[in-house]
Length: 461
Image (cartoon, rainbow, N blue to C red; front, side, top):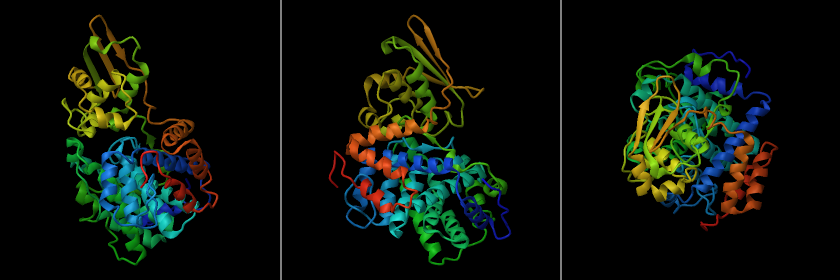
């Protein structure tokens, strides 16, 4: 990425807008364009395959009485732009198979759940091209990557939920990128988004539906922020860094100007991971360690005790809300968040990459009993380790699986075709792949969204 000299005397929201504009000037590196297409593919995949999960169904039922011109992934009925962004964003978050930063606010937490739905809606609202859509996606990811890095740690320490905090920023930048907002309007959209940040973690801990709605509310609010800015809204120059601005209000400290607008040698859209399992980010490596390396001759009935050693915080953190929850589990999300349940399910050979397993089996008696024999301990060296004590031996799993959430592009495409084909058929899935591959060739976004509205095998609306 070319270094751009960014003035900050007009405020950090203006400086960030300048940085975003500068980053997208001229031709983009092929890896950035390819990464944006992969983000789009993955979000389409998880949204389409999650459309019948409880949060996605509820979001649809809440707004489907109204109609509009924007696509809802996997449904034939269209909605208004804000409603479509909301439903698609909730669906994108409903399985917990979304993309991910390394934890906390970094990389916007789960940016695909709000950036891509907002960009799609903005593109349809304006009759944009595929190139405009990609620009919006790249700008949305870049905005929350920089904001997540620059924000004070107090935001997380005060227990705000990262998706709720970052969502409106990413969606506003995405819509601004699609619509080609100038530097002033984009700055104002970001300033308005600072007033829309919010979201607490109690729903994550209790396993209720509010966390899924964080993505939907962020996508909808970000669109509104961009619309208000485009209409000429006047905003404070100090919405981010002022004494009563975003950083101080939510984090109790100043943000980092350098991390917000400093030069980089890469783009946010290239940094995010892609979850393999339908579970919390913090459980991904533990599940992979068990799924990929446990000996095939283990009988779970012979397991006396399992000890999982992981760091307290970070990508594998045991202190994240709900991760250390003990049995029993009363809903799908509690099971997905629990290090104990997800490990027990993996040891039992359950399909932990399928969210419907957690929806249907969160109270499974055998898995719950095994979860009760799992102990969690903090590791001080950053490692992830699983010790399985059997009646006659002890097995230690400690292979390096740190690349679990960074699959190759070919694997992301394979997962897309496998899962989407199961919903709309192999030919339709192949057509979607082709449309995304060629989306930067000035193909109208309407061609893609028409294919996204293809009926699934399980529904007609």
